[in-house]
Amino acid sequence: AQPNAPEPLEAPLRDLKYGQLNFLHTTDTHGWHAGHLLEPSFSADWGDYVDFAARLREKLEGEGRDLLLIDTGDRIEGNGLYDASDPKGLFTFDIFRAQHMDIICSGNHELYQQNSSENEYLITAPAYADSYLASNIDILNPTTGEVVPLAPRYKKFTTRLQGIRIMAFGFLYNFDRNYNNTIVQRVEQTIQEDWFQQAIRDRDIDLFVVIGHSAVRSEEFDMIFRAIRSVQWDTPIQFFGGHYHIRDYHKFDSKSYGLASGRFMETIGFQSIDGLSSKNSANTSPTFFRRFIDNNLYSLYHHSGHNASTFHSERGRNITKAIEEARDALSLDETFGCAKRDLWMSRAKYPSNSSIFSWLEEHVFPGVVNDTRRGDRPRLIISNTGAIRFDIFKGPFTKDSTFIVCPFTSGFHYLKDVPYNRARKLIFLLNRAGEIFETSDPSLAAWKMSPPHQLGIPEDIVVPEQLPPDHPFGNSQTPILGSVDRALTPGYTTVDDAGDDGDDTIHSPISFYRVPNCIQSVVNPRDIDLKDEVVDVVFNEFIQPWILLGLRFLGLNYSDEDVDKYAPDDNMTTLIAKWVRTNWADNC
Ligand SMILES: Nc1ccn([C@@H]2O[C@H](COP(=O)(O)O)[C@@H](O)[C@H]2O)c(=O)n1
Image (cartoon, rainbow, N blue to C red; front, side, top):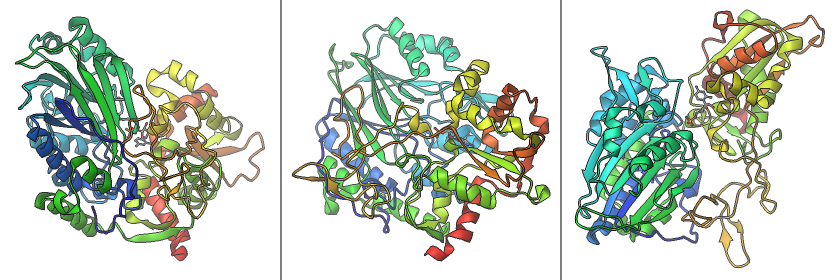
């Protein structure tokens, strides 16, 4: 762990159950390879994960079992370790690839920008030449300009000890916001391709492993499942997914399961399968087991059967050191100001004093989203809530925090002099009229503007006995009495298709409040209720397609040509940092 990471807390643990074949799974790590430096539950770093995988491998292989490592993408954007360097990712590629991977694929984040997808093609895919799969992604070769597969479409291999014959694919969901140097083929088309149809008909296969940057409950995985099942009625299929940033486990049928292993290095997913056929033995009744490991040393020591003196290797320590040096070189601990209270994305109700979205709406946007060319004209400032990625904890707000809270390079755009009597209805449409957006253009489903982790949670979860978030002991990792005889720490309490015993650490639950798709600040609203008043509609550039469509629903026909950059030297990340420097510096 990093030297400034908090010690993990002791907690009751559920064990792993090993199978013939075992998997460790990471997804949506988003640059958090230093681990969480303010949360004991998730304080192990990538060096510890490398040691954990090595220790588990020694143990499992000693018993004649196999272990495979999987990563399902979105490795970048979301933490200073990736975002603060110039160019971005200067340190993280070497750190990440210190971990062996057996199957790895791209997420959508790798494809938002030209340089990040070229990094995949030129750095990560070659580093994992035998394991990177891109079943439905092509890229423009930056040297030749030719359209080529980002990586091989599939691979067939046999596990070393058990001789299990595996056919593996690596998909990306039907993502359509990629930069134009990559092509994401829709999954429904890919599964019609000859190479896929041939691969799924291979009879000498004991297990299909479909990894993908896609929710495990998704049309895309359902289509792949049905395609394989239609030609292999009985062969087990194991899916590994992500993208929604949640822990989940989905049963497709009695021989097919899908694991989603959370986000931000909070979770190491463990999956085992027993009773598989192999090239030497026939078997027909596989059993599947999953566990979500909290990424801290207390859990990692326990599951590997090691302790502080036997767990760590020189290799792991070197990776930990490299992360520490990168964080130092990037000055990620530089303090811009101090938060007087925790500000939550979903643990506090919106609107409220403890909601990060209320803070943005009431303080940050009115304070810093301005453009001297437009003076003090009345304006509506609208942002999607998905632009915010993490909570702010009471205490120092650092350079790292700016990227943790909002890593996107999206700036603000605006439409000038929009009739207020129509523009004022826009926020209602963005938040309440999802259906008409989706009907008009399925790629513009309004929920895509909200944080991904709430997609699988249809309603608020209110835990009555929880300490309020602004209570002095209200931070996530403070022990509270969860039952009469033992103290539990608040944390993940996952319920999935296999029940409620998936988490390795037994926690007390945390409240979850859903938030709207968008928030809005109304700035300089003088005279704004006059019917001929006009306002500037300023918005986060990511939501431009929804803003234009929403205004069209309101009878205003604007197009991309009417839109201009607002405060062009800044973006949401730099603006939040500016506000903190100005308003919170004296709190420290
Ligand atoms: N420039 C951007 C890019 C993305 N978002 C938000 O993130 C969501 C996707 O997140 P994943 O990590 O699951 O890929 C997207 O739906 C947006 O809500 C953004 O705000 N700005």
